[in-house]
Length: 455
Image 1 (spheres, rainbow, N blue to C red):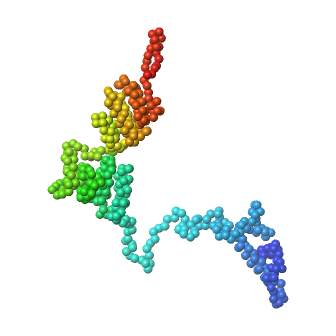
Image 2 (tube, one colour):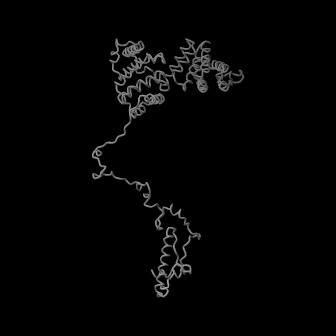
Image 3 (tube, rainbow, N blue to C red):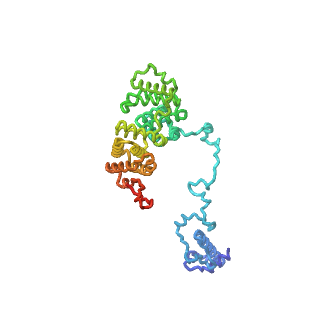
């Protein structure tokens, strides 16, 4: 150590100001030179220790000449105390610049990533120890649904079900709720919403009750729900005049699906005073009796919208047109077309109507179909796209239709012109109407040559 101090003193000679700090008393001036040299070496050692500890975090090192080492560009690294506090590297200048303790150090850190902690054993000597805690089972408790929030919570679920038709999703949502004693209100709420909806929604409601029975609901819940419906029929009739007949159909369908007992209707014989409830029970009894004779009660509401087969939709549209030709009621035809609930398939209705005109004999069908299409166009039942697609389909199939109907091209041209005059097809669609080409010999001297000509 003495040799190091001497080397440093030789490289950094002390000034007079530095020696002024060590004031010597009169007695010490007369002391031997060895004591004076020892004090100078001790002071130099302290200065060396202070300088080395101050510069240790900066990454500086002293060269043989005592000058601090500089970077490759000749710049001294920054020595701001703030940068020292925010620096997470090792203070000793070792390592690869990684965070301390592998990222497991610091406030609020539980340890390095991937470390698994074992369950902490209960200390019997702990003053807060309780023997009952060892046998405790912790579970998530869902509070029971209040009566005021019941309808507000379940109404959106049922309305969304009318859109997607997935009974499993409804069962999962109801399973997350603690219905408690209010589970019997689910069928009543679903049927009440279906009374004001379409026939397809009533079919979905019947399927929903069948799928929920046994999973979320019990048969007693379904029975008590229909009991409430029969008691509240006088109020339901105010909003839905046909509620007694519809509730009777729901009861018949529930008995057929075996979610209501067959003796359910027998329990009300001779005990019903309400006229509406009696009408509902009579309707259910008649349907069940007809079901024994071959009526399909499982298809009581029909299959709504796009769930029907295409062949069935085509058949129903053809029947609709035939009934219209017999009655001539435009509004009834409009109502029947709405009940089919297939706005994306109205081009088939336009196609069948035009084909019926081409195959008909006489002007009556021509005028009635033209009047019906104009009426449906004005009432916005048939859109521009559906009307255009229906006419284009006739244009594509006119060659095959002409095989059975020789005058098909001529009738189609007349119908298209009248449609354009009525204003429910555009000029571009009228110009796309095909015309039949015919073979005609030019003259006897042409050698059998012929040319195509359209009329």
